[in-house]
Amino acid sequence: MNITAFSGIDAIDAREWNALVRARYPFLRHEFLSAMERNGCVGESAGWLPRHLGAFENGALVGAMPLYEKHNSWGEFVFDHAWAEAFHRAGLDYYPKLVNAVPFTPAGGQRILARGQSAEITRALLRGALELMRRGRFSGLHSLFIAPEEFEMLRSADAGAEVVTREDCQFHWHNRGYKNFGDFLATLKAKKRKNIRQERAKVAAAGLHVRRLDGNTATPRDWRDFCGLYEGIYERKYGRPAFNLAFFREVAAAMPEQVQLVIARREDGEAVAAALMYLDDRALYGRHWGARERTDCLHFEACYYQGIEICIQNGLQLFDPGAQGEHKIARGFTPTRTRSLHWMAASPFTHALRQFAGAEKSGVAQYMRAAWRHSPYSDAGEQCSAR
Image 1: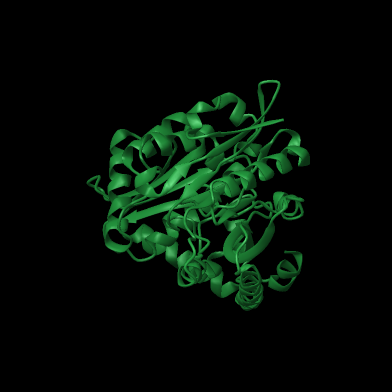
Image 2: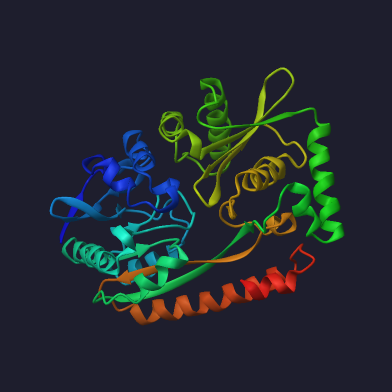
């Protein structure tokens, strides 16, 4: 098996790459990664340099690993600033490092593409990445937001390097076979059910027209309006936005059925808020939100309730609305563990990093137990024991 590194996704055949993506997971589709590279969302200026690996047998692609050289920790959502500071204090270089993830996308999913989910191909790609880590003198290899079905295979792989496991918590919604939004509400405690109805009523009373569009039905104006709202949020809160209008329009054109744009307009057509989501064969992923002004409960409507309705209508099992946010609990989202793996090059900090991760894991478990106590579901205890 031949493992080859590429400095751009377009050097790899799109059909062969996509054939290895399970359930049409949107963020590892060749079109999605390519649009980021072509439109400047990743690259030297963003601190995400593509170093993708391909595994070939007889000239055919049988496995791949999305991989990036990082010179900062921007857009990862598994925070390692304390690790970088410790290296700096000891006179060691933490950057550059290698990251196996989707840039600016804290959504769990496939991280190794392997034909038939082959353990042999997975190990070969992991070893190839670790060899690149050693030859390039990177401080470590970090695989972020790993799908549960892939995590144990990667963690237990005999890779010849020390690995540290980190955990965190997000809040996800699970479809329990609901036929409509009312079915979902019926599973909630009476007070939570009443609150959600009141929140949706407030948005309706505000005189806004909320529409759901996909890549086929969204117009150039819709994308301009959405991008302006999205960029406004970044300018007010975060600085430079990670994505741009050219990226959004290219992805919408390339994978239109996997794009869901929720946009709220006034009667005169002015866009006041919008949310962008992506879906695959089993899940919906909330990604971006923007608003021109504050409208009571509109964020909950656009980012959560519309997404729940999309899941029910399309038979999707999971709604991952994005990172963080205890406010999601009252709206039907429950604690879900996320995990990442970190293979570190030889350093004096291996033991300390393990201790750090162990304490973090205990804190996350405690946090999740506390969060479950606030579950809005009438059978919260049963749901907690099933997770």
